[in-house]
Length: 270
Image (cartoon, rainbow, N blue to C red; front, side, top):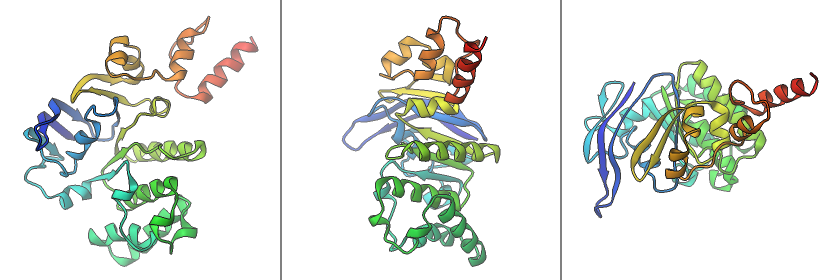
């Protein structure tokens, strides 16, 4: 479990990025953190692996106080895929990037080899294994960063704007990856402006505005509150809009396009 207790964070210039934030994120939970630019989303998740320490308050990850624990120790438990992959890549080849974290955490070479091959194949990077990461496209770099983190199998996976630069096929694959992780009991935290992608996962949704948490609940409940949508400047998911504006709306909003299609086809055939 992750506990964020009365956390405030101030930059050196005095700017307050987080204001008295308190949250608990349960093990095995899918959580989306949403809000406009500057709301404090990325600042908040950087507290989870100790890259940022709270100015006030306390963050504990599996009972480890982040102020008293090194980034290396926390990274074994919390893997973060950053919004800008260029900030995360530094090795000469794609293979070296994936293997680096595994070696750093002390995995035996036999395990490193197996996990490297899995990651390259699963994320469609096999043909680039000996290429420089800097030669990849933006979308390929995103997939590489995800492969790096999943290879060492942390308990918590934080994805900061993972759909940027990804086409529909890759977004669908990412959705399946997240579902797979949740089935394995992993905790997935998603920071995103892509409300359609967030909606498709039906996670717990935490809405931030001006460094504060302004809403926290199920996706359908949060996105149905006009005062929250307005304050955080959010776009309502299209499937939610469709669900509520139908002449004979379904009992609950469509969770994905497949559910919507099935309902519409059955309605037409009645």
